[in-house]
Image (cartoon, rainbow, N blue to C red; front, side, top):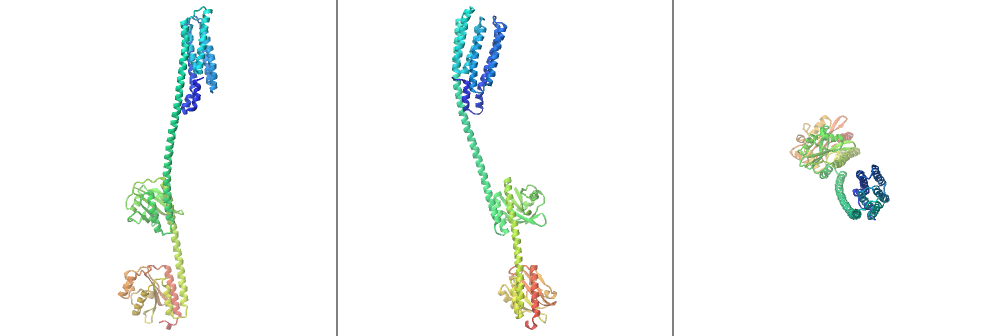
Amino acid sequence: MTVLPRESSSSSADVRGADISDIAQAPRRFERAITSARVAGAIAALLIAPLLPNLGFGYVLALSGFLLAWAAVLHVLSGRATTADDQERISLVAFVGDCVVIFLGMLTITPEPNWMLFPLFAVLFIITAAFRLGDVGAGAATLVVSLEFVGLALWRERALDLPIQIPYLAFILVLYCLTALIVSAMLREVGVMRRERTALIRDASDAGDLRRADRERRQLLDRERAARADAEVATARLEALQRITDAALARSALDDQLPEMLRRIMPVFEARAALALVPAHPAGSFAVRAAVGLDQLPRASVRVRGGDAERAIQARRPMAILDLSAAELDALVGGPVQASVVAPLHAEGELVGLLYLACERGHTFTPDEVGLLRLIAERVASAIDRAALLDSERRARAAAEAAEGRMRLLLQAGETLGEESAVEGRLEQIVRLAVPKLADFCAIDLLEADGSLRRVALAALDVDIERANWAVASRYRRDPLGTHPVWDVLRDARPVIWAEVDPDRLQRLARNNEHLRQLLERGICAWMGVPLLVQGQVKGSMSFTNAESQRRFAPEDVATAEELAGRVAAAIARSPSDTIG
């Protein structure tokens, strides 16, 4: 038995989405249509029945009311049906009830001569049964209404003496059969069409699934490509950050370390120039410590006052320079740039410098790039801070070593001067102790009774210089009226220090033109003379000269020279005068 409304429930498992909902609602739409047809039939009966003269008004109302009540009952029962079994039971009840309704209707109007009009309503019953119960329902309904119609026609003839209209009777029976056949054929065709529609829906659903799967696959591929691109960018940035970190951790001087870091930073942000600046005087000024990407540096320092640059310093984060403060920074690279960014460098909470990048073309710094620049700025700041600490440590170590060397020099000098040997021999050892620990050249000159100076000891880094100086000293005895700075030391009884030796001072040191030429060749850069005082009386002087080392005399060097001269003077005072010379 093929029932169209139930077919929808079986086919609904093969469709999806809105199509399932559409087919699932088919039985309800069918019941609403049948109910509407029943109501229309009741109204038609109400309108047509009064035209039949042999029926009273009560009959008409009873028949119409019965039809309306039956339609309402079936509508309520159909609305409560939730399963296919419920629908099947309602279909059987409706079939039986319709048989009774048709029979009662025909029986009611049997006395009417035109009673055969009512059996036409049985066509609706046949159609309803066909839709509810399929081919079996159509055949059963046709058989029932045909038997009812023939039986009532025979009863009319015998009981009411009303003749049977054979042609019309045959016409009605043929109409019933044709209705059943046509409706069954239509239902079969509709069933085929419905199955084809279901198959098409299933195929369309499968095609939609394929298209949706293909679309999702493309979206996944796009997301994968985007994720891969992001991963490659992130990897490149991590590698760049690692290279910069390696440069920051390199054990090299900051002047070598910073340019290397800047060279590794520039490709990451497509910069044409990169500068590292450190705080300078006055406050708010920054001096260029390293620059990469410039043939020459137009300016050595810049003043940062207000604008985005100062806001970046206060905010402690990188910031693109978009206002007039860029003019000051752009001047460092020799002109305006299309895009620039400054990153403050902080170490231990202190501002240790600025990192400035200038780009060739318009470059919009993304949040990721700003975050990367912040990490890079931390590495650069760490390198500057560590270099400052190392430099401070080196200076402290050098100062400690120098202090230790000066102390060792004085101890060795004390031991040498305490020996029981000729004074001039001990003085010769003293000047050799002073070179190169204290100076590149050292000499001791003593005052003679006639007021002239006699050189008793000298030492130099170069043996040839020693010979040349002994040769000059043997030919010349310094004149008290001369211009040599040693006479200033003797007259004032206090040290004379020349931190710089200009041509005029060099002329005062020379004894003749040949000596001046030798001094020029040596490149003397500093000179110091210290008096030899014995109980307030000047006995001579010690002179110190720096040339080859290009060192300047520090206050510690002056103090050591004075201490050494004091010990030499004390040794001279303890020695008999006849042992000197």
